[in-house]
Image (tube, rainbow, N blue to C red; front, side, top):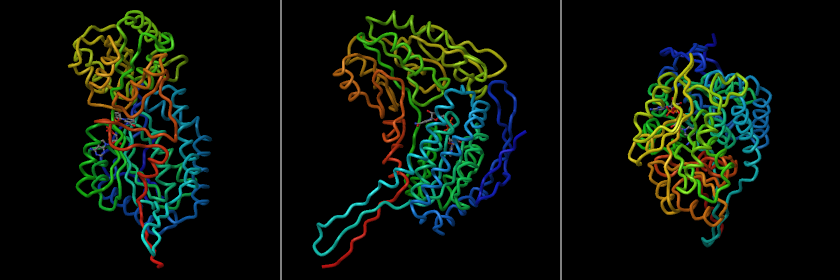
Length: 472
Ligand code: NAD
């Protein structure tokens, strides 16, 4: 059985804390164990990161050297893709095709930021008589990173790649639910040529190891992707010490289908948006709003397509929806059928040895039920009809969340109006989600603070320095 180790100052170190089992959710079997890092080991990781940053071997290395390491990391991730896919399928229960796509993005972040850093230019100002003012971005220092289990490769590399590119040191606390895939990923990134201490990994649960890292003296910023409770906890820890903190949190995104939509395309898109990644993605379109004129036709086609999705062990042929990450999570997902105030349209059957639940949907009677309001993080969609554009916008905005949204219409003007009116960070028109590396991704409202991608990531991992040179 695999034993998960921490990675501190260039060495693998067994954790001194409580032991946690890592399960294969398709079978319920234990496939690895980890011993949590103790508080003092978290402190050692932060100290190592600080020493490495101050020594300058990485933080002051010429851009070409940092680029070479990032490019090697991208190649190493691609070369190990079969192994990484297998690990993530085993731990997270996501189908291999989806994991391959996520891995492609994970490697691409390293190539992207190795190009990006050559394009970053400072500013020169001359408004002050007899002086020239230079504004530059500098690495911020020790970056504390917290990442989730649902898309472990792409959502950690979106943080680690820009942070390292900018010259920072990293202490990374991956999810305790997917430690094998993140351990392998860290080995590959470090093996690309980082000096000791530039990348450190501490493993364990959020409430112990995560909390210790967020509170550790010596960190210079926090970057968190996960749920609202953990996000609020690290944001509070950051606020106590005036540290910058980026939070990428949950969503309850609306798919809005107008009566002029290409219905077969909208059905395919809505089904994938609701149930892709097992319904365990922050950007799933889990509230499906349909114009009343096409509601019945759309609902029937959606139900038939969703019921055709094969559920089972993601290693088997043709499977689209795998198990939930844990038994407790599967039971929580199932409980939302009782927490809704409407008619179950289909689905929600719990079955098998693993943590399986079939995709399902409920037509909610009103928006004041938990299924409409809360992020379920499983394959359950809440349906509601609307009668005009204004009502569609009002329903989409009737949420504490604001991460993404999906609009299906053939009217470009309407697509623009609705996109501008919906309070969410990313809107897709006639498309399932697509990740553009240059573009920011992040949430309005309770979906988080800050953005990741392109220049936005660069700003997250740098400080702004102004230097005024008098010469008058
Ligand atoms: P989670 O909040 O339980 O955990 C995320 C990470 O934070 C893990 O490493 C965890 O151990 C750690 N953590 C948890 N509580 C902590 C605390 N009090 N202090 C410090 N660290 C803590 O989330 P999860 O279950 O791993 O992931 C699912 C959630 O992540 C969903 O809500 C989903 O929407 C969200 N998510 C958001 C995005 C985005 O980009 N907005 C992307 C993926 C997932």
